[in-house]
Image (cartoon, rainbow, N blue to C red):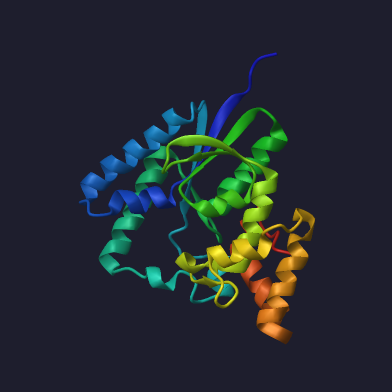
Amino acid sequence: MQDKKIVTLIDSDSLIHRAQWRNTFREAIVKLDQDIEDVIIGTYADKYRVAVKNTDGSNFRKDLLPTYKIHRNRSVALEHQLSALIRHLVKEWDAEKAIGQEADDLVVQWQREELAKGEYIPIIASIDKDLLTHSGTHYRMGERKIIYNTPEYAHYFFHLQLLMGDPGDGIKGLPGVGPVGAEKILEGVDPGAYRQTVIASYKTKFGKDWKEQLQLNGDLLFIRPKKGVGFII
């Protein structure tokens, strides 16, 4: 039986911002191309797909929480440059825009499609730690290494995020609970009881509003494996 080939699914958002940082536009183009090539080589890819942010600004998370990533507001000049880098990826790397969602949602949806087809081994390539809420083979671009993220760890990490939120994206978890506090809450808890432990923690912190707060955070943090499939408490 012939070995399966590899398809690398690239979340390019972080690469775009990293290429742009302290570089001229021409330098950013060179760095971005080099980074994409490095990912393809580093994952031994036979095929690749590149996901990019949709430049029209549509994103269901912004609809849920208008302040989502608001601290990342940039100058008009910088936004034009980032949009130009996205256009470059679309033109030169056949990148696909994440309509109404984000690039990390799109790569997870591609992963599920590829797994269902069974023709290629999908590798999710990203810097974003949020993608570790989904199991499978990952290429951690920052460390330049391939890892297998177990279903057990993906399950644990998602519940950890529900407790601590994601300050980098403006998602507030439990008041006063950071990574260390979240780890302590789940310490020694059977994985089958993570959900109830999170619910109990939200009830303690938010009282009668616990369900609304948990639903909002879950919808914001849950990377959707299929469009329209949201977080269920």
